Amino acid sequence: MTGTTEHLTDLASRWLGGSVVAASDESFGDKENLLNPADPAFEPGRYGNRGEIVDGWETRRRRAHGHDWALIRLGAPGIVSSVIVDTSFFTGNFPEQCAVEACGIEGYPSPEELDAPTADWTAIVPRSGLRGDTRNVFEVSDPRRFTHVRLSAFPDGGVARLRVLGHAVPDPRGLEQLTIDLASQEHGGLVVASSDDFYTAAQTLNRPDRARTMGEGWETRRRRDGGHDFVIFQLAFAGRVRRLIVDTAHFKYNASAAIAAYGCDAIPPPATGSPRWNEILGRTRLQPDTGHVFDVDCERPMGAVRLDAFPDGGLSRVRVIGTIDPGARRGAGYRWFNSLPASQALDCLTSAGVPREAASDLVGQRPLAGTWLADLRARPTRGLGELAPHLSAIAVMLEGEGA
Image (tube, rainbow, N blue to C red):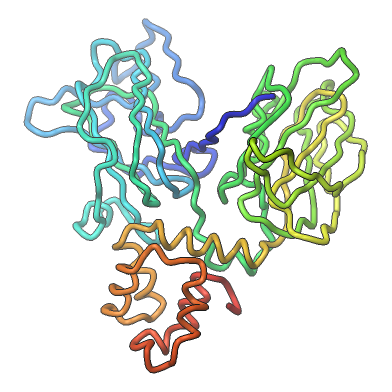
């Protein structure tokens, strides 16, 4: 079985909507190459109007003081675990050092707004040496949720790829009113195990995009043992599953012949035993190169889904459509708010109408326990101070509509 103890998402991935919004210079290599999901490649001897064609971001040679930089908007805001600064194929022209900063900010800021003092940048990778033609890995320990990162290259040079690995922490405000893909990577869903990733990895199955080729789906080896393959999704939110979408796009001669689906409340730690799976869709035939929609109706919230694929083959995408369980929405609200940088948390509260002084006091009380609101409401009204008129707005933000 494939799977690791820690499952990370590339928060900056183009598949999730990540973007390089600005760079100091891109004379030799486009800034957009940094987030190309494909591994870097290089063919020596190919030249264009800007010099040798490179598969990365490369700046001109600096003749003055300063350094180069690139601003990246994360496709899925979250908590960063590590950063990979990949200098593959840059041997005599890579930066000597790099640094990575991050910030959390509301809305869709412009590059000018990201450069303002209110952006509150913090170093998550201190200025560190780089090696050429290497995947330079830097561990990050900051527990806050970020929306943007800034890569600095000292003094100049080329970087092939930037990967920002971590855990997506979705903004849950308003999601309780929607029916969503509970398994999607953009909300924090994860593929935590699969029986076989021989040709392509199961981690592609819950990307929010559409596969463009067979190579962007999940394909296993040909089985000769009479068994079947499987994949397990940890849902971003526990919820009531209403529909499964199973897409075999581009798999014309090697699609899985049938699937079955099961759900459980949550995946227990390995030491405590196996999940208790409940059937949500019996064994059902599939067609090649087809998007299948299966209506289901789970009686109780599911926190994980297992899909069995018979006997082997390929699937393009899987969607688990449903509504978020109120308890899961509440937990997500507190996790989100507690992980925000202080400046962003303050902006969220003041935007909801909370006076700045009271908002600042509340931000300073974090982390808030999941019972914070209930405990606060149990107090006499006179003890709530400036928060009293705004409890309803705070409740909606933390716990969802109608909290």
